[in-house]
Length: 437
Image (cartoon, rainbow, N blue to C red; front, side, top):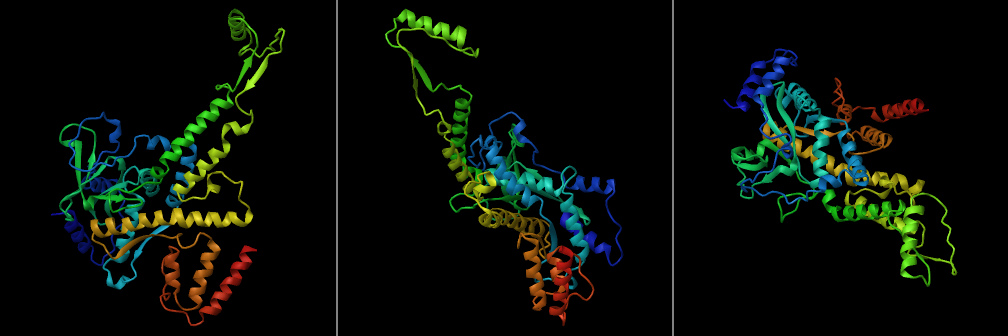
């Protein structure tokens, strides 16, 4: 009996009786035994071995991971990753479904949320999502392994997978029974390549294109820019620490012996000691400077330009990466809103769509549910409240629909439009204004 049939049978056995709350260690151990992970958690720690090339590996530069640890890139990644991972979310029925048309809707919804909050024995939903978003932004290859448990109270388990080790089968025929992906573990033998079906892996592609099965990460776009920025930063660091000498001492009409003696004296007695050098010669020595001796030698404007290019690659305004020279109070708010709608909202919707389609629909067969983030329509809390109250006053939305948008439970009698909604909204606005004052 497959795990899908076992889970359907378990739901039928529940009937109308009240099911006890699951959560004991025995239940969790039994669920984990059924949903056993097959991919390697950290395959990069094993030594490299030649692996048969049955699938297409992504030609990702090896130093992308190193670039992701530099200050500017780390700042850009954290702005997007932390904002998406910290959003409030919910599991709800789709628009075309109502609770009376879906069997055990409340219990299934509660089971989906519990399984997402505890995807495995070591991760929470946020730690799982942060790892996947990191790979998505770095290389465009976020990956999550999903396995069914057969437990109606915890129907699946999820594990983050190193997206750089995932290979794609170019000859996949679209069948759910044929392998679509494979993980290169770096081990010898049959364990060197682990095949994965379409309903066993969530693969997030950032910037998908038609000429390649792989996505394009934001850091890949900024690869050359980051490399140039690091080179400029190293040069400026050496120049600021006097590791690169930008001047020379010229003494006219000296013999080779006097020249060598002066060099030895300078190296032995003056250089690095902080003493004042005293020279006595017929002609005054002249200092030849190779640079201006100002901050322009550090190429700071060039570094700022490169930081702007990195911000463009991540769809962020330069303001969020520390460049505040051309920002004032009237434009700062607009730039932050633009960053939310151009960088955070698309990635959050991509994650939500993959969870809904790959996990709920393909893996479980529960196409009536969807995963949504609650904070994508409006960043500002007051603007979101104004939109919802206006729709409620116009009779477009009901109280329960507004509560569902905010992730709250439905109220009895809240599924019908209120006859005096406009008056009630005005009263609610007055109470809200008094509370804010």
